[in-house]
Length: 202
Image (cartoon, rainbow, N blue to C red; front, side):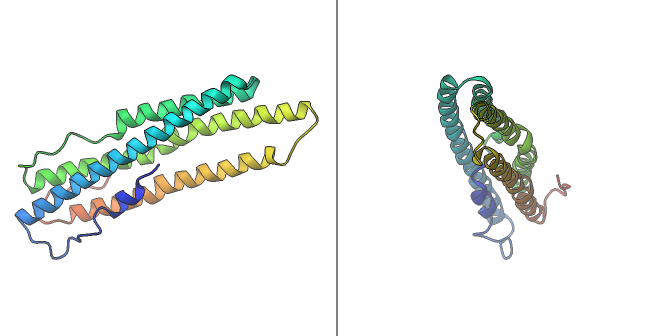
């Protein structure tokens, strides 16, 4: 998924240390909440746009393909549509926070946003990576069978599955390990603010 840099850097420009309590602290948390919502919106828009393009391209390939290759292209195209649905259904955060809330309310709102994105990223392997990966495996098997029928088995038929397996494994690490760790760190920093709810980590 994209947008991880924005999520990672949200708090870096203004560290908590030295921030005054009271109204200034409320403004800081409110600003971070707005920035976080904006980063999630941009990420979702980019992901959905890319998924729509992939669905359109793979549908065209499916029309021209046959057998298992066609089935693989259809699975990948359907996976892209599924990703759009999932992001629109579960990727968005809660409603905008009331600007008149106190510090604790803003903290709870931002904690809820962190928890929601952590849950989303921890399930990336199921709803985002696995469906298109299965489609690629099916398409690769179809291509291998087609090439075998004509007595040709080029090395790329075996190398490509290894390549995209490594690519999807990296995508899993980047989201579920790296990005989740960053969000948990920022969640812990938010909990360290004084006079706030003592919530436990997700």
